[in-house]
Amino acid sequence: MSENFGLVNRNDSSDIVPEETTSRSQWQRFEREVKRLNAEAEEGVRYKVLYLGRHGQGVHNVAERRYGREEWDRSRILANLRYAGVSPRFPPPFFLFSGGKEKKGKIHPLIPSPPFFQRYYASLEGDSDGCWSDAHLTQTGIQQALAVNAFWKRQIAEAKTPAPEKYYSSPLYRCLQTANLTFTGLDLPPDRPYDPVVKELLREANGVHTCDRRSSLSSLRSSFPNFSFEPGFHEDDGLWSASHRETDEELDARMEELLDDVFGKDGSTFLSFTSHSGAICSLLRVLGHREFRLVTGGVIPVLVKAKSVMQ
Image (cartoon, rainbow, N blue to C red):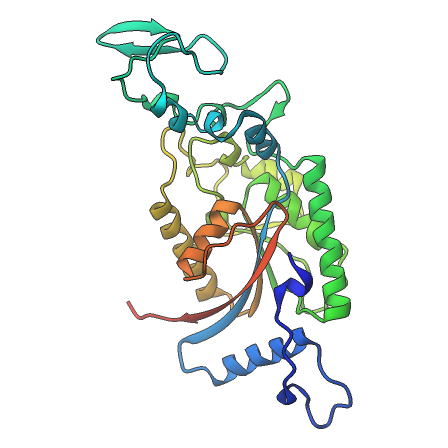
């Protein structure tokens, strides 16, 4: 987040309504412009503002930093290993197979990395320092979300930033925690209460990494009773696969489906999405936005022009 969400300050005489004695804030001018765009838009066109927020630091983020990216995602390091007696640093024993013969602690230079060794640490449930299956926030992550809460309080009170009309979240635990810590206790307009909705498709790139495998619906409802779950949300996670990690193309297709669903059913203009680094990068790609990677606890607002396409 930057000052004022990065909204450029523009001093334009058209921003001052004649009957008003004071000028509007930059965000009030922006909100009025978005309303004008929607009022004058041709049929099938709608403008929306998405507040895309990444969850605070999770246990898995700390683990990846501790082991290093290549140790976290072993496909990179195993592809480069060469012969002889060089054992990667992960809990022994490990085995590779060549010509029906078992080799312990060695990798032959001509043997490609087998699928069951890809993304080694990420595929575990955790380690001696903690569990990262459906990872929870760390204390640092909690403080990051609370800092965003304080930022929103200032933005609403001082900059008159429009509060979201609807709040959507990934179903993963760290996002539900982040959304609650970010939006609870804000001085919201009566017509824009914090009534969050869980969207299954808003989750992180799916598969192999246990941090991205969600908890059961009954468990999430017990931990987050203030959340509504979209119709059709299943008790168990039927999307996560232990053997296949979503490609960028598959993730982008899922984000397109999510946007079609939200834009087709929700007439609100200002929407909040609490999600993940990979998912937000995918959303930006789908929207034609430049590449932008959010730090944990980061938020970026995006103005979107959506046009209905008849099938």
